[in-house]
Image (cartoon, rainbow, N blue to C red; front, side, top):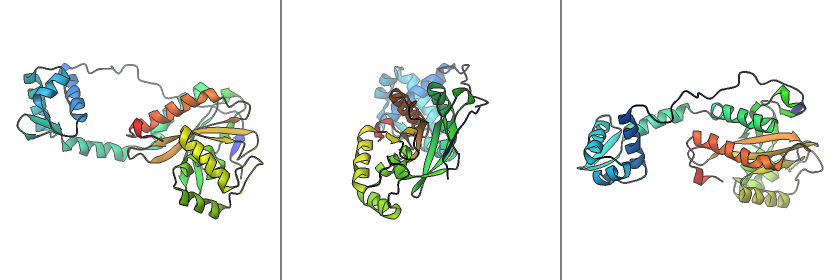
Length: 275
């Protein structure tokens, strides 16, 4: 089975940013409400009104009035007189939002921006058993000859950049079990086919926070990948750039990582907890 085709294609209906949305609320009381919620979000325990008002830059009477209104809506709790913390209503709404999140939907616009930057195809892949599956792609006819992965195509974990990200997240026992099950079969002379070599490669992935495929799945094709994480710090997908060997540029890596980071943030991931 071939995992890509080298051809021209067109990316239509590009998503545009809405430049009409203001950067701050136009209603002052709403802006103050957001500020108070941010102050409470910075503390695990209930916070005294005096401290809240100081950090928010509001008069205590103003903060008190807004916090009481938020308490009516259960957005804020008042466990004791003069002390406030975030309320259960925010958790309820957060769970509703989380249930609607979809990694593909979250990734589409950032993937297209990354493609515009590199002029090479960008792929979103997930793990299924001992393989990765190409879930989505961003590419364009205007980019000339390019490596286009087929949506729904599969590839072994140890031969792909995204697959290495998932293996690097496994413990040594799981990696050894994967090697035993698959035999670490290779596709090219560059393929990693020995467990010791794979372990060294995965150690490098953990240290650097990205993975690469140096013509290991297909001769003439190189890839680089960064992980996409959810709000539980779980690696749920990989974002990769695929290109003919002579066209993949190392200076794309920071932009790739930043794009994967943006997608992870939109799924609720805390940046400081990534790989």
